[in-house]
Structure formats: structure tokens, C-alpha cells
Length: 180
Image (cartoon, rainbow, N blue to C red; front, side, top):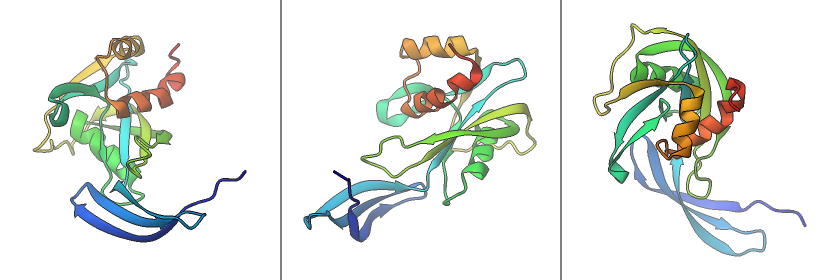
């Protein structure tokens, strides 16, 4: 048996903001059946694993409104235009940590492929230096922390790090950082 693609018949954006759109597609299945698919459309996101000269990894702590919890996460954010991941990664690194650095592409993932088309690209940032471009986003507050890879592994095991995007990004880079 071979899987076949669905055919998109139409798309309607029901709600649009600066970061994502809520869309509804009408589609046709290979057998001719028709249906409706509701999803969140984005231009993607970029997450950065910043590594200090001492080999520690920077995470930021911030308040997450929907769960009314504080969360330890890698710096990152949404991409506003397609194929602009590299630019957004450097921008988010500066905005959330105050550093700029050399970015190495590490991989990509989709955080929830039944609900969103979002592709998150993950980068490792090395050779960090304070940025003259640093400007905090008015809607975000962060506390910045540095951890060893062992500390990050321990915090994941103890559910102190629970953000799915951070967990997926860590899964992509941990072997490159010699985490056992």
C-alpha cells in the first residue's frame, strides 16, 4: 500500500495576528471524500542553545500566561516572514540574552504536526559577546541562568524544564554537546 496526499481545495483565514493565523482548509481525500481541516499557520520559529566560553548553557526563565507558570526555556521566538529563521535566531538571542554569537544550524522539528504547520529551526550559538544591539522586548521579562549539561538533564528528569519546544531542541543538540 502507498500513502497518497490530500488535495487542498480552498483556504480561509479566520483570525490573523502578527505571529500566526487560524485557518480552515477544505480538502479532498484520494478516495474522493471531502472534509475541513482547522489549524494554526505560522512562518515558523527559531530556538537557540547559547553556550558560554565556560561551556555552560544559557536558559531564560519567563512567565507563561496560559499555564500561569514560570518556565525555563532556551531563547527563541516566532519567525515573522518565511525563510527568515537565521535572522530571527540572531535577533531572539540578542533580545533574550543580550548576547550575539556565531550560529550553527542544528536541526528542525514540528512542535504539534496535527495542529500547526510550524517548523522550528534550532541553532547552537557559540563565541558569545555582549551585543550593542540589545533591546528588550517590552512584552517580555526574562531572568537568565547558566547551567551545565548535567544540570539541564537533571532538571528535565525532575520536570523543572517542561516546555515542549525546549525539550525538542535539547533532543536535537544534546549528542553534539557530548551529553551521556
